[in-house]
Length: 316
Image (cartoon, rainbow, N blue to C red; front, side, top):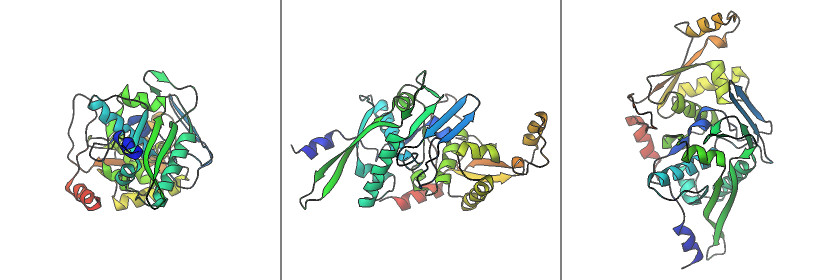
């Protein structure tokens, strides 16, 4: 048996399996929202939650690099569900990953994929968020190690056959031990905007199948993890709301119609008279029929007819 054929026997694939994502990374800002290298650290502190993300030589891992972690989490979840052996080292075909995430299959796609692996391996994370009853007090990187398996075509060119990624302990425990995963819509990978991707993540985590979820504009900007000035964040948010292209969820902005936010801040002695943006609520509502699941386990997202048609239009 050829070496390349032996490699293929040990590669996992997610082409026909449901996608799963880790909940803490859905809820909190861990990744850069821009494709330009982000050299400044990201710091997030809210109550008991503390996150510090430091860049590597190629900058902080981006929200597009995060697709690799989604793919790995989905493979682990699938293997766990089928009773197969589990390991932090995950092997998969680069072609399958690139196809599922809509990245193409040319030389540039493979080069960008290698850049993503490098950033995931060199971005340092410190957080108080526990995984598997253990809180990381040292810095960790998203993937501890990675390697690419290549072979040579008859014409002498090199081809990437398999990828091996070793997940960090924190991510592995969250998925396998805590079962801290939620299903996501494959159309997420078709979102080109980093902000649109981040909004979907927050909607999936906080709204789920509830009738709606609301959050103040300023607090939303904090949870998104944007480095923008608030007025530019608000401008870009309005553009995304106008397009209504986020899968499964619709976003709207309102002036706190019930006065709940203003009343709560008044109780804390905060003067709202000069806080124009603090009066704005962002409301998220599902595009599908909401339902309830009493056991609290992760549930799949139902897609409306429009979303199903969009999926069909993008299938290869």
